Image 1: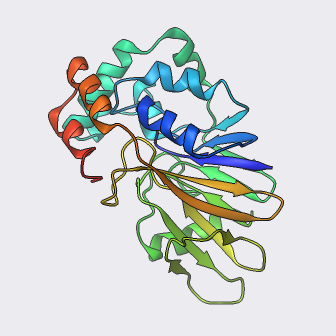
Image 2 (image 1 turned 180 degrees about the vertical axis):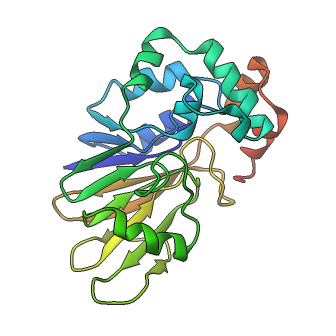
Length: 242
């Protein structure tokens, strides 16, 4: 099966459409949370996602829009964007977000937004944090999002500690004894210095994962954000991937 793995779409329908076109044929979408928040098209992104067979889990912005997290825990831009999203979310979109699980196990793969230990909120930036989290899932691979930065943490069962692998140009083989925590990066708001939408494609039969980037019309999203009155910093950062 060919799976399109996406995370942190963040209501950026232009970026999401670019990924759907760039990815080529696939059988299913796995969405790792934060479908909404920051961007100007939350309902369009959810509607488009639901056109495909999909597995989706909740992220911190999805929960914040539902009132399940205290908005005081967010920075001012994120808080304003979430308040805007609350006001503009359709009943159908709200119903979809309401039932999203925190994690999902599919065969050899665990899906979590932040981390397997704290799925909604924990950021996995560092090896030390990843090392602890390998004890909190049993599958061979855990896909996460939340940081908006692509990363591969690898750990061998008999080795001490784990390591960070460079994002490869060729498909990464997931077969063998190693276990992984993998972040495909963000579709709607990349933060690794590359403004192109980030995603990955998983081949569950070959056990390979390909990291991909899709250019999109950033100015089109920015214009929609300005029309919505979203914070200027959120608009500007899309141009730089930070």
